[in-house]
Image (cartoon, rainbow, N blue to C red; front, side, top):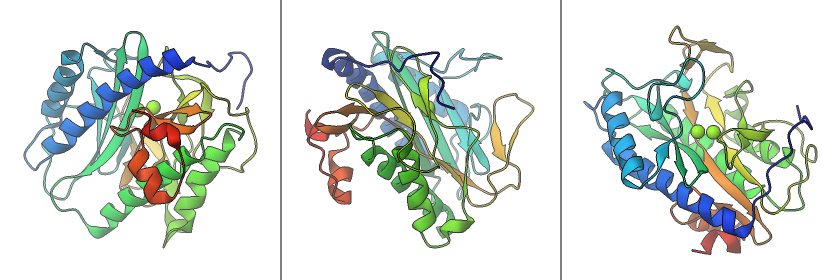
Length: 280
Ligand code: MG
Ligand code: MG
């Protein structure tokens, strides 16, 4: 899993500042999108809002044209049993849906990548809980992105949190799709799994930037790719949640580049000391 063919990109402080600017474009776009998620809105309309927000900031949507076949939109919109990579289109959101929105932007050659799961109106308590567990698992993973640690500390923190929750042994933690290094490209070395034993893989050093992105289902972790060649859904139809942030590793702790406040408030809630999170 931890191939040595490509080195992990280590950024200077100046380069991390550029990544922060890209991360803020993503953070502000997701904030606007979350507010736009209401019953009656289509996923295509969300995509239009996202592209305008990204381009108005002088950035370029990372996802548009990405991969094979080229991804046809600026965000991924994955509804209910869709896990990731859903394509925006005619689908109109209805009360009780839950949608994951994944957004990437390139600014001055540097990438930011983040995702949120948003309820459409009022959702079932189990869906709200699935999203809460996934989000908090993400933050436990971000908190484990510490200089001096090892890469799998992050996935171990994610998995441990999910399993520690009420009914946590019944959640599926997706393994086929994982987090990743990020910088001058969206997907770089290393892979960042959301499971596994701690203390393995590459050493975590200052200047690394990682996208941490747990995908958790309310059932089996088995997945299917739909006939559009992109949308990934659960095999059993169970609902899924997906949360993601881009984090920079610094000697003063993790700095969440795609959080508006750098992660300061949530790290404080969790009792994690990270001076880097409140540096701007
Ligand atoms: Mg993403
Ligand atoms: Mg990602």
